[in-house]
Length: 115
Image (cartoon, rainbow, N blue to C red; front, side):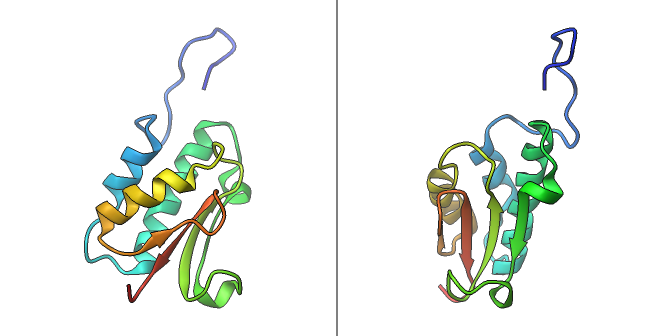
């Protein structure tokens, strides 16, 4: 974030300014779909906060019982994120987590347990 004196302010939690790299670091092979979605949600919240957004409003994580539109998956969502961030992030998340991950919309990731 840029402060009033145009200096770069420290970000908490720190982020690398590369969303895909931070998503890849958050995911490990063998994580459950829920653990993976929650790990990515944490990354998304950090980016939302760094953008001056309210993560508790802009970011969400939903389990299969919390939605009806994306099948049996866990969803990490940042609707106010960069345009279509979920599309390239899905490829990174699949490589890092070794499980099926796909965007339902272009601003979320669906993590499937049994794929």
